[in-house]
Image (cartoon, rainbow, N blue to C red; front, side, top):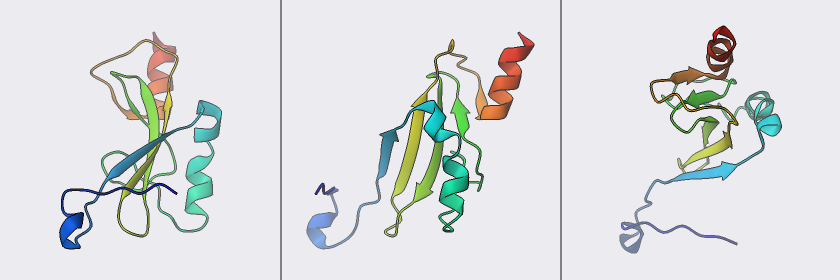
Length: 102
């Protein structure tokens, strides 16, 4: 069992955390639909609900966020095997469309 403790847990308050879990790209693509089935509400990195992974271009990586019962942010992240684009932040479909246009 793993436990996380933040600076405020000494006083009985819960410190909210972000925990990122690396997953292979093929596993990330269907994760949004699987997460939303039991009403987990996957999110884009900006907090909007979505079932599609978002992309941060400087890494580049695709990710889905969701919250656990204590409000911690959990993240499924897959590194993309493509050239970085530091100015890109958007959906995975926009990322793919952008790369096909080149």
